[in-house]
Amino acid sequence: MVVRRSESLLGRRYLLMNNHTEQIIPWQPSCDFCNEPAKYDARMLRGSWAYMCNAHFEEHGIKLGLGYGQRLIFQAPGKGEDTE
Image (cartoon, rainbow, N blue to C red; front, top):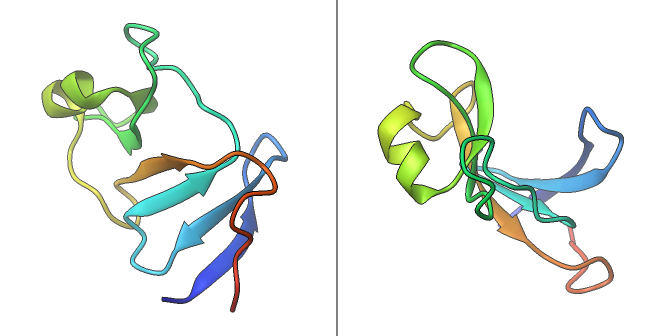
């Protein structure tokens, strides 16, 4: 699997998997609705984006993929560096 390096809007490094449905990140964001650990960074039915836990993604999320959202995979910095 090919993994690309990219930059988030906050300037933090993350890795985007080539199928555009998973994102490896070095920090654990909270759900914007309930403060549980977020499992998704996705677009909502209303059009805005949010970090969401499983329950809120089922309620408010559209789907995964480019332009829709990614499943978040938390990986502590320095663990399992990517290769191209």
